[in-house]
Image (cartoon, rainbow, N blue to C red; front, top):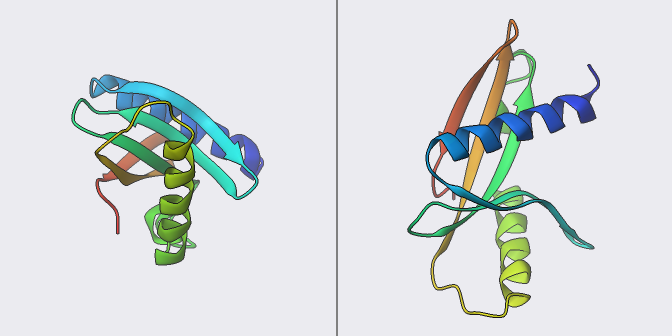
Length: 116
């Protein structure tokens, strides 16, 4: 499976995971010229911008390790751009990261809330 297909499958699994938690999905794969936000969701308390990383093994490290402080800063900037486009003010938001490790065909999901 190529990396693009793996990434899309990981994003679908992440969305299913969030829906199972009772979250409302607002958007997926939101893009602007500065980058992309994988998932935008409402957990009932806050608007959540989610970065999803998927790997087939941990040989190159756990998927969560691929999300650096620089990536979180980029996500924060993208979140602010998305928020600026909204017609109403959204007072609370955060950035979460979901890492999916595809071990032997069964995905292992790690969810980090309020990643910094």
